[in-house]
Image 1 (tube, rainbow, N blue to C red):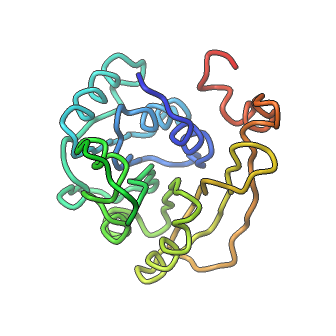
Image 2 (cartoon, one colour; image 1 turned 135 degrees about the vertical axis):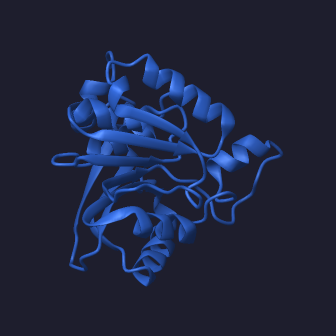
Image 3 (tube, one colour; image 1 turned 60 degrees about the vertical axis):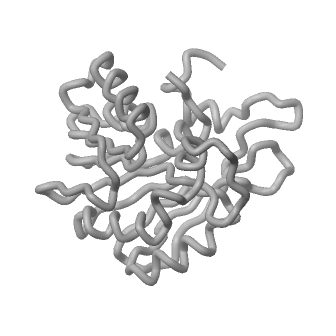
Length: 216
């Protein structure tokens, strides 16, 4: 199973305590959904993806896991997805780029660009499916934070916690981890560094993600 740093960071960082129903938007191979099931021993986890191959791979990975009874993959877009209950936790590693250069690989474009799911559509879907006291957790490129925050506030969804992610100590942050909800308040902000100048994983990164890697 392909595992990327962004997904592992988000899945390890999100607060899953007390969640009963979790939705993973754009699950890919299902890594984040599996992490949610691992970290919360009672939650029911739904995972959606519009890509046929990703949906199939996620379904296989769920069946092979020890949490298969609490995991369900759905081959559907967020725009079309409906659920009888609201989710108290929604999590997503959404498409990255809004107006950047796109490749000739259509599948890669769908995965990494906002072709099939714009930020406006993502926010609309979260608002439709999130319970009133619920929280949404996202990982975004740092340069898209102002755009996302502006669009989210237009949709009455507000950032309540933010962690900047620095790839190498001394470099500017390249990602932001976001917790959002319906209450507007001044949010806390901190940072995490993945590697030091020698390319060695930092203690803070290893501590956060230790349950999801075989070894460092």
